[in-house]
Structures are given as structure tokens and as C-alpha cells.
Image (cartoon, rainbow over all chains, first blue to last red; front, side, top):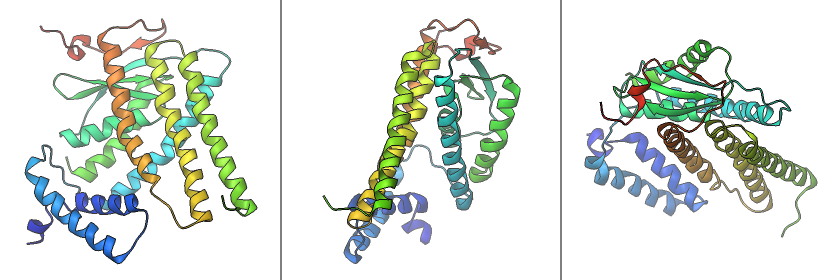
Length: 163
Length: 120
């Protein structure tokens, strides 16, 4: 029954928060209108969702987001240090990152995470979809970088999406 | 314009200055780094914190001077969603056009053709 009314509970929650942020105030009327929209929009668009993904561990998502914010902060400081360093001795590398996770949504999240964090950008996905090509700005040990991405992000995504 | 308490003035101005500094560093990096792929790193990363600092300053200013205001956070959400995608598209274009890379770039692809669009 609840599944019928709320086919995508997290999408509904996101829409409600989004609505309240757009309004920038909280009042009973706005809240009720927001709840109605948050229920109606997922019902209407549910058939058009191409890549359904289920979040199994919502609290892990919060943990992941906080971790990501901290890493973005560190990444900014690292990049700033590299840019302002007087010597231009950087060691870039194109690294192949073998994927353990499957599915469009988890891989997209992982690729975006890699692009947002210290000195790495996702450039391409292999034809069979089982590896990402990463460009790293300054890396001494590529294997260590792959291990740290696997432990910090991929393991957590695996738990969140169970894939 | 309302008069802010002095602690809020200090906080807002330092947040804005930090944000502006990171945006400046990102622009310097864009001009200074050696090749296309390395240049990509500077604006995608430093801009997130640059914009983030200015947005935090704005939240503090409007929250202290009038009522609570959080709709600036939407800008951060949009930026987090779009910054990796634009970086990815640029990196992909750079890769497929095989732009010149600095000599000490290590290419660790075991089968480079697996990442190209060419027909076999």
C-alpha cells in the first residue's frame, strides 16, 4: 500500500526539502502543498525513470556525504598547494580503475565522487563498463590511489546500493 | 542595509575572502598548469570551495540580518551535480582528440583501444 503511494520515498523527501529551500520559509500551507507535490510528482514520473536505484542504507548516505564534503575541502587545499608551488614538478598519470560495483547509478555516483575529490578526474569508462579511466594530477603510487578509492568510496557505495 | 553585530561582520567578510581566494587560485591554476588534462583539475575543484565560501557568507549574512535563509544551499547542490559532469565531458573530449600531454605523464592503460570510439 505504502509502496503504491510512495514509489520512490527518497525522491519524495528530496523534492519536499527542495521545495522548502526554494520557498525559503516554512509555513503550514507551504508544507502541505510541498507534501502534495512530493507525492504527486514521483507518481506521475515513475514510469519514465530509466535507471531505478534503491537505497538500502539511508544513514550511510549521510555518512558518505559528510566524508565527501571533508575530502572536497582537503582536495581544494591540495590543488591550491600544487598550483602555488614554485616548481612545476607534477607527476600526472592515466590510471585504469577496475570496478567492483555494477549498475548505472552507483557507477555514476562513484565517477562523480572521483571527479570531486583530491587530484583525480574520471575521463572515460571502458567499453565493457568494468573499468574507469582516471586522470590523476600528482600521484606517486597509482596502486595506493586505487586502493584508497576502493576502501573509502566503493565499499560504502556497495553497502548503500547492495550491488 | 542593516547593521550587523561585529562578530558576524568578521565571519561574513572572512568567509567571502576565503571563497574569493580559492576562486583566484583556481583561475591561476587554469593559466599555469602545463597541459589540458592538468588544467582541468584547477577550475573544477577550487571553484567548488570558492563558490562554497561565498555561499556560506551569504547564508550567515541573511540569517543574522533578517530571518533564516538557506536557499543558497541549492546552488551548492546544483554545483555538485554539474561540476563532475562538465569535467568528465571535457576530459573525454581531451582524451579522444589525443591532445599533447606533458612528457612525464604515465599512461597505465593496458589496452588503450578499449577507451576509444574508433571502430575495430
